[in-house]
Length: 263
Image 1 (cartoon, rainbow, N blue to C red):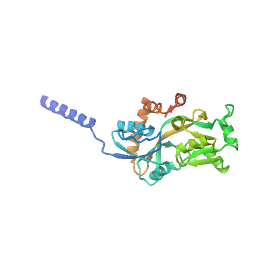
Image 2 (image 1 turned 180 degrees about the vertical axis):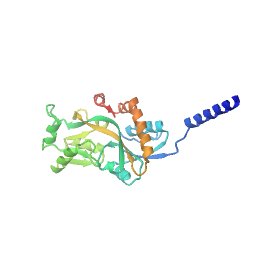
Image 3 (image 1 turned 30 degrees about the vertical axis):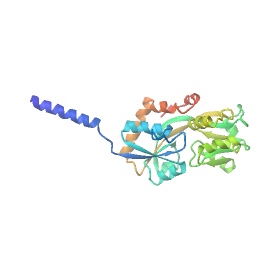
Image 4 (image 1 turned 90 degrees about the vertical axis):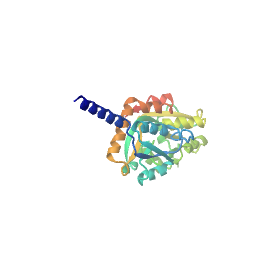
């Protein structure tokens, strides 16, 4: 009898050990916006940047390999639409993207209006700038990530918007006067204002009433409902633990972290 109990105990230990060392054979293809600060090539580490750090954090928790494929934003949209990728990281909830992918929000943060100091007036509200017909806005091609639909449509009708698929070009537009204002995220803003030395050229109007929901899109065709639920649970656990906040804090000004919100 003692031998039977001992054998059963050993079998249980072996099963637990196997469960702990279980290897995930699923490989996820993750499309990321290749532009800094989302993704920056790095020979030694394989990459760096916000998207890289966030995806690697999820990969470490999940145990499955996530291979990053950095592309421009329009290509990322086509990859998700054509089921050439499992996950897109990172963007905001968008009607067109949601046709091909399920959105999982990671965190929410206040968007901000970047205004050229040549027209900046601390007494003006965001709406004042939007209504001023003399002000041209810069926007990124590939999705309405930082603009409300009505804002984007009105600016388009009034021919007051200039676009580019590359976010660094938008800051160049402000720098050379082709545009005077633009909506952006705290992450993009810190990176480009720092590297382009624009601290004395632009001012910021933060918009906590319209926070940007940042998240990932999971392919409806390539990722099973079970896999989707597993990814969502891992993300929820990391939100509760404050893991995403710690990562985002590396990429924003301290004032912006005030408006950070886990979801």
